[in-house]
Amino acid sequence: MPSSKRWPSSEPGLILFDGVCNFCSGVVRFVIARDPNGRFRFAPLQSDAAAARLQKFAGVSSNLDSIVLIEGDRLFTRSAAALRIARRLRSPWPLAYLLMAVPRPLRDWVYDFVARRRYRWFGRSDTCLVPTPELRDRFLGG
Image (cartoon, rainbow, N blue to C red):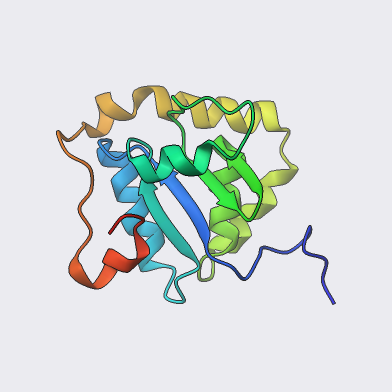
């Protein structure tokens, strides 16, 4: 039987994202389209639901601006979060998890390069992503 440390939990992961970032909202739509089994739930980082979840993790800043993945009692940010999310999507996206072999400082440098430019390249919205009625139960507070 696989160890829970090696394989993702069967419980839904929680993705916290920058709700006013057009790129980040696009990533959420991308994940939803490739997650037909509902392995993820979502909340904007700007929401009370996200703040409540983040309080459970000592030493985590409440002003995070990167993607956050919470799986059970573990929190992942930046490239680790992105690759762990890819691992739980429909094929071929789990292959991206092989990039975990790349040293974290290099992976995070690439992640940060895009993150610093996301508003300039993709713009931002005045409001957070509003889920459709059929997806509302996958968003916290929805």
